[in-house]
Amino acid sequence: MDRQIQESNSITACVMARPIVWTSAWHSWRTLGLNECLDATVAKFYLSNVWYKMLGRLCMRYVDLYAAMVNEMEDEELELFRKNNFFPQKGTCLVVPIGFIVDHSDHFFPVIFDYQHRTVHVLGHHISDPLMNVNGVDPHDWTDWSGPQYWRRIGLLHGWSTGDATNMSVITKDLI
Image (tube, rainbow, N blue to C red; front, side, top):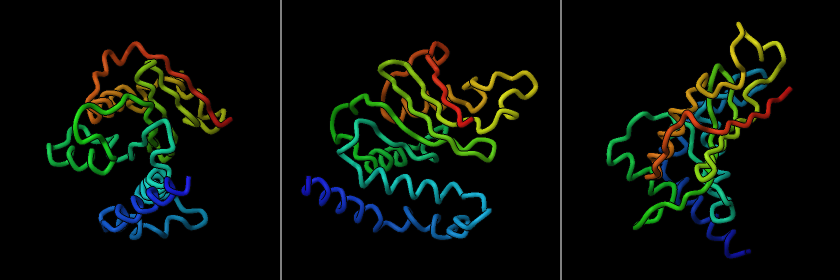
């Protein structure tokens, strides 16, 4: 266990040694203040740091919110993403659940994609009863926050075949 922690700490140190990882969060640190809207770069930095520290001890993979949102990556960007996320140098990436954060309507909420079971877990998308039923819109419709596009993009980042994104089991748990 101590060896895993040491390896995790050295990975974190190597990653944090690259200014591109932390400078945007540093410029937005004031959003951590009371009654401030948290900047997405700060959330990305924190969650990436936690994931790097837990690397090798989790049965899922984390994708930062910017990588999850990008429609198309150039080959160099994709190679950098795969390197920064410790994909295997050769062969395919093991299919595991993917966790990420969605920034939708000034609200962050976590999502877990399980590609093997074609299941989407949406946690805390809605935070109050009045917001749940606006203009007769289904509050659990994952197309509202572009869920199917996230499903395809994240699958492609990993080199996985995603299949039809309309035939999914979407499980939601709201914060009300």
